[in-house]
Image 1 (cartoon, helix red, strand yellow):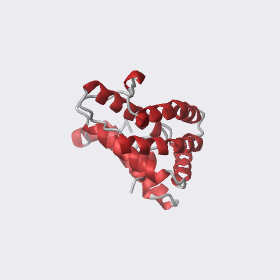
Image 2 (cartoon, rainbow, N blue to C red; image 1 turned 90 degrees about the vertical axis):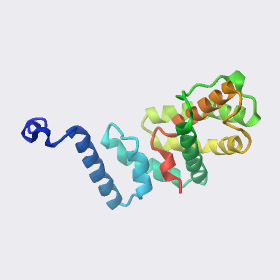
Image 3 (cartoon, rainbow, N blue to C red; image 1 turned 120 degrees about the vertical axis):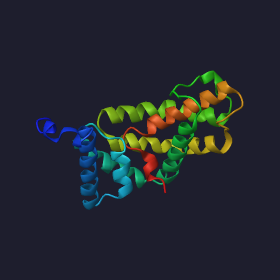
Image 4 (cartoon, rainbow, N blue to C red; image 1 turned 180 degrees about the horizontal axis):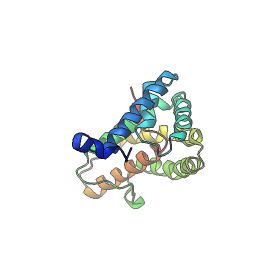
Length: 185
């Protein structure tokens, strides 16, 4: 590819990006033809996995996750978290000051993340994408409780930053294998 690029001169700008988009589009079509849903394919390819050989295992993990009773609520919550983080006025870091956790629900979510995230991370690092996503199902109850009773955009700037950090930590844990928000209806 690099050898023929000079022949095209300036007709092709940013060829690497164009090729990546082309290959990604072709891969998505091929995967849908193999029976994967558009949502499953989009969820996996949204993260642009470095190794294409991982895509089938990630798809299998997403399909298994989607079959869980908790998946719909967690996918919707993940989408909500992503939207909240996008709308934040400043850069948000996945950092939580435990001393600033005031509400019972935010403490419960933090505790659940402290338990679940390392398990999900370990499974992810071992290439067990299904286990990585399955363990996240335990977060449904604390995530639901958090959104039912915690005001993320608190008047106190430190509380707001800490709550956004908690959500960033959640988002990070939930989106290693695939962008689960793509599974939300």
